[in-house]
Amino acid sequence: MIAITEKRHYTPEEYLALEETAEYKSEYHDGEIIPMTGGTTNHNQIAGNFYAYCKLAMKRQNYKIFIGDVRLGLPRYRRYVYPDVMIIEGKPVYDVDGKTTVTNPLVIVEVLSKSTRNYDKGDKFYFYRSIPEFREYILIDQERYHVEQYAKTAENKWLLTEYDGQEAVLAMTAVSLEIPFLDIYEGVEFEVEDESPAS
Image 1: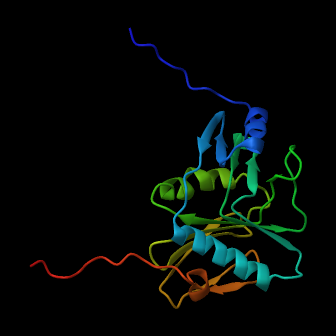
Image 2: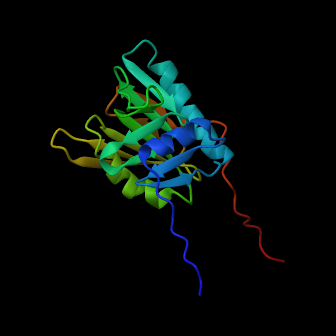
C-alpha cells in the first residue's frame, strides 16, 4: 500500500515568519508556499529599466515606486506575491507585518515569462483587481517588442491597449507618463532564430 503524503498548508502568519529568514523568495497562495524561480537577464533588464525610468521621471511627485523585492498582500484571496514593479500614489498602506508588505498599488507591472505568462494574464490579474486603488496593469513581453496595457475606466471597465514595435511609446493612464520602448527594452537582446538554409 502506497502512503499518500498530504500537502502542508501554512497560515499567512507562518508564511510571513518563514519568509523573514528564507534565503530565497516564495509566494503564498491560500495556504501553499510557492518558491519563486530565477528570472532571465532580459526579465531583470526590463524590470530595472521600467523602474529606473519611472523613478527619474516621477521624481519629487507624490508617488512611491517599488521593484520586485517588495511584497504585495491580497487579503481577500489569502495571497502574497512579488510584482516586478509597483507604483503607489501617496503613502504605502502596509499589511499587518510592518513595512514589508504593501496593499495599495495604483499600477502593477509584470514582465512576462514562458512559465508565468498565462498566470499573469489570467488568475493573477483577477486577484489584483480586488485592490481598490488598482488602476493600471502593464504586461511586458521579454521576447519581442510588445506590451499589453489594461487601464481601468471611470465606468469600472478594463480597457486593453496593445503596443508593438521598437518605435512604440507606452502612454500610461493612471499616471501622467509616456515611456518609449527604446527605454523599456534598453540593453535587451532577443533570441534570433537561425534562418540559414539547411545544407
